[in-house]
View 1 (cartoon, rainbow, N blue to C red):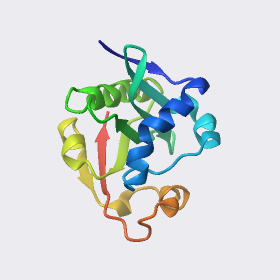
View 2: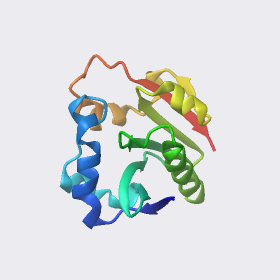
View 3: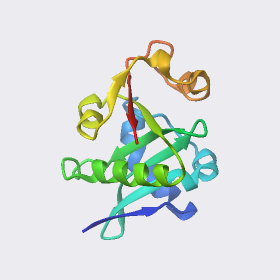
View 4: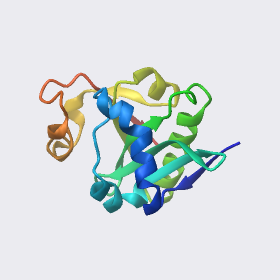
Length: 152
């Protein structure tokens, strides 16, 4: 059975193991242990038999705007609703904190559309997003990720 829980500092090394293949492919940005520790409250884990099979983070950009980032499901567990469960858990948490809109930058357009997100122009994203995260990407400045947003 899959359950969703907040991440703990002791989970960081295992989380990095789960995301490493996607980082190597350039699909997800590398996050250092220090950066993950600083943002540990943002992460939701998906676990099965107490093993981390996926995670995602809800990062806040304004008093009513957040971003789903670092969403990953371990190979072999995809197609079982794990990603959808992580997104739903993050959306409920965001709503409880007063978030009105949630965006993402992703290569997985169809997945995010399946959970209610709609494509928007990247230019609609907060400028500080581009300089804080995107500049660290190996694809920058030629970004082929898709921006999507959902109103809660």
